[in-house]
Image 1: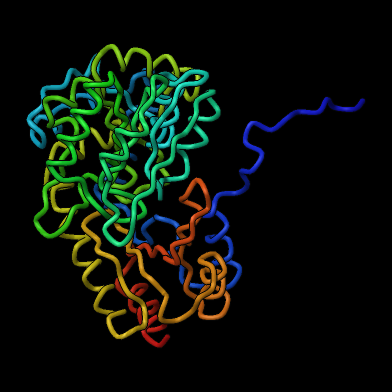
Image 2: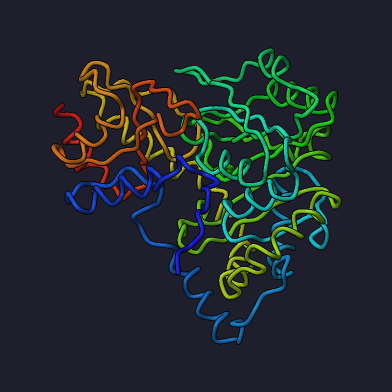
Length: 383
């Protein structure tokens, strides 16, 4: 029996560039500085806490919103970090990683014809999530090397159909962070037009050079109309655990949970219980900025004599570099060339643009062991 013809909802979408480059790195035996995951171990005490939770019987379905001890730990961390009182019962939802939090939020808030403003280069899950839910992504470009937001352009592009603005702070892939003026502008625009803000803050603990992370949760005008999304995978070097969370006012949380319960329903129980206990010591996450700043600075020093030109990096564990002194190849071709010929894998920037803009930049991940960075740096410095 012949299957019916099924029109694709995402006809131009193939395998993500992250999977493509990681697979190529494996096939070529290249050093993988492409996909954003650490190559060093998760904290041994945290692993022991997972085993402890399993032995204590925490192996069945967790509550749909998340285990209460973890939601309470999240609320305490928000209060201590951002001065915002958060109700763990009605404002915190534990999700299967930040990507599920993003999808569930967009599914809850975006309907047919609704517009969502995205800033390119943008993380690749935003646009498909909007379109899968019948919405219309509106892509605005950030210009290198500073990749700042043009708020006047934002005002010009808002229509009666605009419902959501998606910001990513600190920003993947550019490493920029939003300043106080940015949040004030965002608040004025969102308030004036009655918009909701989705703030992807998964790298909130990884901000450098003494710059504070300015969360929407700490901004009086934004906290009441924003969904802030986070990832324990980024914070605790455990991306494979897929544990994230969303914080939002109760009316927004109520709708997000309606989507969440039919996407994953609940998240792995022993990991939640272990993370809750691990968060009891703030030192387990407050030292992350200094840890990654040392890695950023080390990687910069290793490529200082190369022909690459690094862009400013104020946060995340990614560094953008221009290769204009080396080649005029398109960025994807250049990334493949470096992987196949020189055995160092990176991510080209053009897949982060809705229109395929190619700024001739590559993204390197420096969340790696010292020896990994040194081997990659030695190769790159020789180019």
